[in-house]
Amino acid sequence: MFDAESFTRDYKVPTAPAYHKHHRAKWVNIACPFCAGNIGFHLGINIEKGFAACFRCGTHWIPKVISALTSQWMDAAKATAARYYSGDQAVQYVPREYQQAINPPMGTGPLTDRARQYLIDRRFDPDEISAVWDVQATGIHGDYRNRLYIPITLNRQVISYTARDFTGKKEDADKYRACPDAEEVYHHKFALYGLDQASGDTCAVTEGCPDVWRFGPNALGTYGTKFLPQQVRVIAKRFDRAFLFFDPDPAGIEAGEKMYQALDARAVDCEILYNDAGVDPGAMDQQEINQLRKEIGI
Image 1 (cartoon, helix red, strand yellow):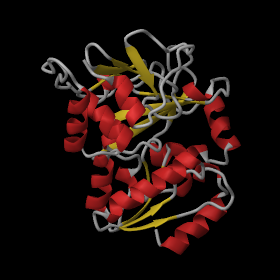
Image 2 (tube, helix red, strand yellow):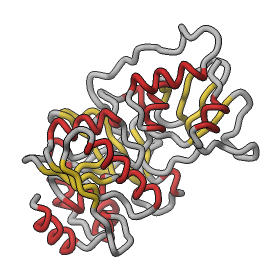
Image 3 (cartoon, one colour):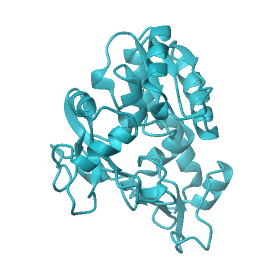
Image 4 (tube, one colour):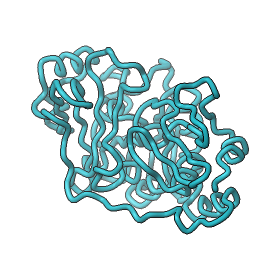
């Protein structure tokens, strides 16, 4: 058994209240730290069997969940998990099998007129987004219909993807939909969006894919504020300087401070950038971003 109630209480992790649609007996539901965007209480921790499963991205090993929620390194996360387990833990970990290649959602192909207009309305150049970031549009059928298909690459291989609704009809919790965990070539939260397009020894670290598009090459996306130690290690190994440009909301500010501490401990020269306009980097004016790129030298 895993005492998820005590763990979430001790680490101040919000859980689905009793009246919530995702609240179930023998489960504790929390926001999934692995899905892109605001995904609600879709990650359930089974108290009796001691495993975690997200409605969208699949099952997860408890220490991996703890690492993502608390920014602990894996050894520390394993020790934390052990404190909340009771009984036989032999069934807790099942080695994950990755896929050999990504199968894009049904109907994925060149940007449609509707997808192009979505990007234009947000002051992006559809041709540039398609050419630089290989963004396409999904088809009109299936669970991923009417979305931007955003491939995630590592060493020039597509390892996963996320898909962004372009109809404007989805609730915040469903604007982004990640590749199912079981269909990934490599877990996207162990990588960084935009890493393959980066060069040199200086980077900017942001939250989401549109932030990376706006900033351009040498910007990296962590897929939200819950970055993982694996992502910190990648940045520290590849870059000497990092400018942290998270969203200007409380979660983004806190994530920037945590990232600063983690990178500073690994001897990366860091600076937190503050956005006086109070908007996400992806929503900023392109001229402002271009000027900022010149100032920080990337």
